[in-house]
Length: 511
Image 1: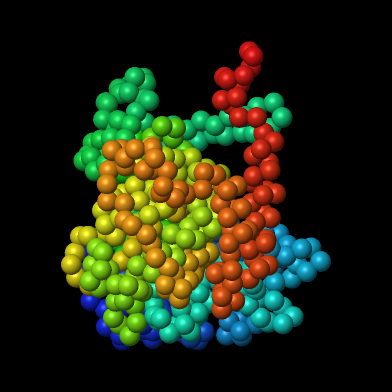
Image 2: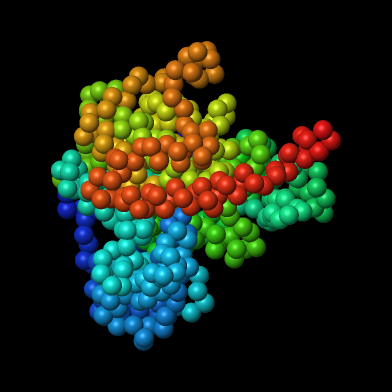
């Protein structure tokens, strides 16, 4: 969307209130249904009372792998007890992407009762709970557990004394397709997508074809019947509200073929990372419920807009915003230094925040993509934009426009925070803002503006060279960064290089 306009402007936050404050009571969702309510900071005993109250005979334990995909295992409620929240439940860590070797495979998943809620997609009442991962011998938190990284990032922020809360507000975009097919082997390589909304289907026999297909780059804010998926997105919102996610808006996005966006209200870093996992889970499962499929791939449609995840961020301390001031675009010196750090380290950060080869089909000059590593008060081609919707100091924030929703939020959000903190600690100048239309700038002028990496390969190389800022406070470990780099090169980049591309046949078959 154009931005999270309500951000903090319309939601005053006091030191003892807001999303970062501990709340030892039931917190209602937006709805009033009793089952929409969700515990915060409940004790193990309260957890089992919650299960009993809602007739949940099963508990679904979820945790995130290195790349950001949820894994799960379900247990009858009566095989768990309060000790489970201390000792955890064992599983094979060698079968999880990017984790342990076979010789050290045993791991523990320790449920976090503060994350418990009723899962919307199981036939029988089931309580879902997110787990933290620990080593079974030392009982220390596992360094490659992404959720542990997010927890350490919040702790390090407080340790610095700079701020006590980092608020994050992502804008994940996605496509809703009717069908997807893909294959890659020794004799065949193909993909095919289809959507009732696809502009390519204006002449398809649909008996009858009623038209109302959003044109290429013509899908922003159309009403029904052109917007086919209003009710489907509304159902996604309904399920999000059930588990306590506050939704601010939903709408069709720019591209044809069902591109959509649902905006969540900002939250503290760890909470938002948890919410983004739920967001993707809900969107995919609601779509499947109706015979549709959702993808968060940044660029599934050739020559149309891709799906980004513009990420809004601000720092607060003692209930007061730290980014408001009298400098450029109403920012404080601290905010400008934060932007300077994020711009300096952006190529390395994007190895986590735009983590796929497909990410760089979206980050291409000449489109609406934010490839210019500079700041601007309103220019959407800048990597960092400062939204100007409100003069309220509480709404002052930066918007990092380069990330996309394939990222692991437990790694991407901390990487952004660590870059910003490095900028504050070292008073890094963000440089001059880009307040001109890039289409009116000369090639020489554009060449002076740093650009995002042109490929995942470049982003990974940047991370390899520039990651000392991530190691502060032991937020990221050298082992995790090395594991990430090795995975990206060995499991994604090298295999991609080995495979012929379908378009190569069009270019070279008859050479």
